[in-house]
Every structure is written in C-alpha cells, then in structure tokens.
Length: 313
Image (cartoon, rainbow, N blue to C red; front, side, top):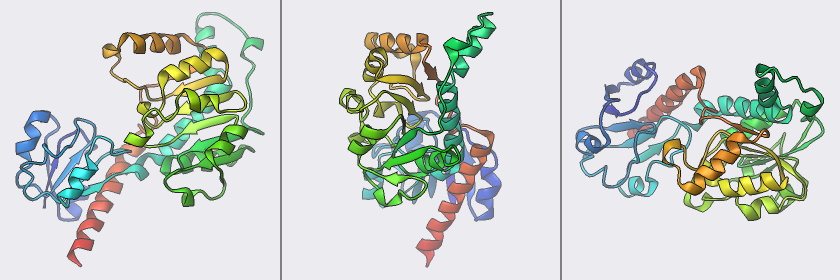
C-alpha cells in the first residue's frame, strides 16, 4: 500500500505506517498544483492544511482508497466528492482533544484573571492591583456549544472547578452526558456566564455566532473560540465587546488568519481586538502541542488499519 503525504508531519508516522504494511512517499515540498497528477498509483493521501482537496484534485486518483486529515476538522476536504468516488475520509480530532481542552481552560483563566494584560503592564513597570481584580470560574455557569471531542475535553477539565456546565449540540445531542447538562441553545443563552465554541466549520455554521446570537444572551458573557474563525462573526464580537455584552473574548482563530491580506473592515475589527485589554488573541495553537503532534499520527494510523481490516473481511 502506497501513501502520499503532502504536508509536514511528525516523523513518527513512518514506522507506524510500516507496522501495518504501508509505505509512505513523503513530499512536504510538493506544490498544490502538482498534487493532482502525483496521486496516480497511490492508495492513500495524508494532508494537513496545505490545500483544499476537491473533485478536480482527485482526477488522476486511480487507486485512492482514503484521504486522511492530520489534524482536527476536515473542512479543507470536499467530503461529497470523496463519497461519490467511494473514497473514505479519515480525521484525527481525537489526537488533539486534550491539547484543545487544556488550552481553552488556560485561555479562560487568563481572560477572567487579567493575566495577559497585567503581565504586559508589569513589563512596562505599571503596577495595578485593584484594576486587575478578576473573577473565579467557581460558581459560574459555563455554556459549551458543540460537544464533540473538544467540547467534552473542556467539560471534563472544568468539572473540578465547581461550576455548572451546560452543553448544546445541534448534530449529536446524544453525546451530552455528565458532567454537562443537555440544554437548548435558548436555555444556554439565558443562563450562561461563559461561552466556549467547539463547532466545526461547515456551510451551516458560517457566522453562527453573529449579532443575533450575542444579543440573545440575558447577561454579559466571557466568550471563547478555539474552533474555526469562520463560525464567529468578528464584527459582531467587536460590537458586543464595545457594548459590554461580551465582558472579554479569547480568540485562537480569526475569520482571516492571513493577517497581511485583511480587508479594510477586517483590519478595523482586528485593530480593535488587538488593542483591547479584555481580549486575548493567539495564532490557532489550541491543538498545537508536541504530544498532539504524535497522537494525531497514532489516531490516523489506527483508523487506516481499521479501514483496511474492515474492507478485507
């Protein structure tokens, strides 16, 4: 079995693939326009974030049996195109769920306790204690939207903080079990003090957290997004930060992460976020740990092994 890998990936993938009878052709420097013809003769493709895998890219994929995404989310892969060609789609969300849960918790503590803001002030020889008095998670109601691997990971970590955890998941409500309580979105908006987004980017979720979404909360909230930038309307976040209906925001993802290509409106919104003392911005690193780099490979190889075991029985 021949596997083409077109992105940089942790080297642990090679012995893992060899252990299940697979041989990897590692081409992280391949240009996107070269991938289409390069797929001829390969049984599998492993991709991270280099490019979008579409029906056109698969034109010469004469033997391809699977496309695997080495990371969380498969929004850069056309699932419908793969289904039409009977090509399996494999993801590795389980690989970085611990990393994302820990990072979201870290963002929340840093946000509510003014850690990043006060750190900058002290470095500038500004010593403000009362102005940086924070809030505790204990006693708060946390609303988690999206209760897959990442939402569940955060809920598990929060369970020791003495907070109430509410969860809403439109697509898999049956996944919501203790320590979270399953609620409607409307109930979550009525009761939450803290809101964390963990939903995938699909067409239906584009701009999910928009002006109406934030306006629906009964009280001001702390807001976190470690999922995808496209699921939250950045202009709406800025509007509600200015209005005080968002007390503070921690954003690991942005609607346009290529910061030198921002439109005029995006730049205005970004400049506000960058200068706001109650906002934390990080460069899409929630799932980015040394451990998750290896775990993602372990998850993918297990799924590849299961795929072929199933097909051979």
